[in-house]
Amino acid sequence: MRNVVFVAPFPLETSMRFARALRSLSDVRILGVWQELPQGDDAAIFHDVAQVNDGLDVSQLISGVAKLAAAYGPPFRIIGILEPLQVQLAHLRRHFGVPGPDVETAERFRDKALMKDMLRASGLPCARHKLLRSPADAEQFVKEVGLPVVLKPPAGMASKATWRVDNSEDLTRSMRAAQPSPEHPYLAEEFLRGREYSFDSVTIDGEVKFHSISEYFPGPLEVMANDWIQWVCLLPRDISGAEFDGARQLGIQAVKALGLETGVTHMEWFRRSDGSLAIGEIAARPPGANIVRMIGLAHDADLYRAWARAVVDNAFDGPWERKWAVGCAFLRGSGRGRVRDLEGIGETQRAVGSLIVEARLPTIGAPKSESYEGDGYAIVRHADTQIARQALKTIIDRVRVRYG
Image 1 (cartoon, helix red, strand yellow):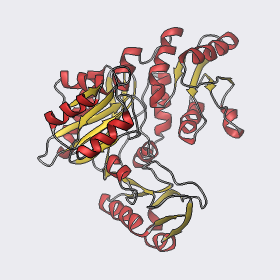
Image 2 (tube, helix red, strand yellow; image 1 turned 90 degrees about the vertical axis):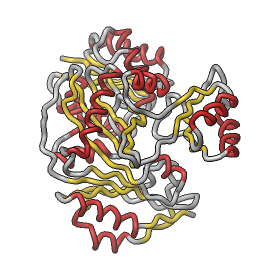
Image 3 (cartoon, one colour; image 1 turned 180 degrees about the vertical axis):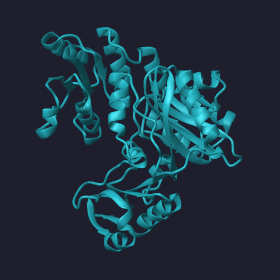
Image 4 (tube, one colour; image 1 turned 135 degrees about the vertical axis):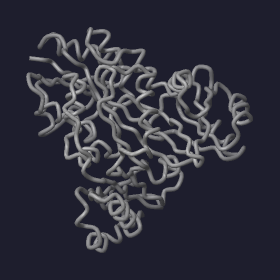
């Protein structure tokens, strides 16, 4: 029996979808290390669990895995899907002698400055960047690349603690908030203009076996700056043509440049107005924002199980035919407070209800989400990309979330 240890601080639905997929594998004993224990049916996924006080602390995680190893034998795999955990998981694998991405590889994906240094050294286009250790560093970087620029933590994710700086006043405010220092530097990046996409992949033994491409409307950073925008992510049905040849090459080369042998990646990239491409950043973990679910719907495949097969069995069961265009509209609105009411649900259902394959409406009374993913979503699917695109537009034009 293979002991597979799944690590996560909290049993959020995003994490539990991947944990559930492990049950489809053969000859596996699923163990867990958690800060907060799963409850109900999710608790039954695990043969046993170890609880820690801090689910991101390496020493506590080592103690948790050691406790499980003492009871059931050495771990076969140590895995998890959260980006803030990838370096810690690599340290756990090193400590217990378990295969998987090593510490150096995890740090190349996690540290955005190091990542861009590696990508540029391999001749791959990405935003110009600089680690800021003082406000003077920020002023110098702005002189070099001009405005706007983007400021973010070197190990940030999901546009959190990220600012777009458009003028000197923005720069002053952001430096006060970030307080960069030699001990706690901040990352400044050239602001990439253009249409934003993602490239998501499954890699086995250094070879990209599968990829998917998604388009964002608009980019997450713009959504975070404008709470009235209801963000949309669309997976076109056909990504096989010349339109995406450059992106495919860029994604595959980025995975190789950063040295991932086996695992999944999520890369954000831009197509500039002149047609040139540039990498935003790449992470060695599954995509968020329902993209895993949407990739599965586009191919009539289970991408959660594909992740499990990759990281546990070092295997991939594809290829699959891409049969559908799939998109997700994330429901959010202007204002503060709690969700007060929803408008346009009935008329939207009548207009495009036949195309909606999954939805979660905002919960009346729930606090407003600070995420660009908003307070609810609707996923549509159709064989024609333009019809799927129009359905998403109908949803964001008609549904309104009110707060109070």
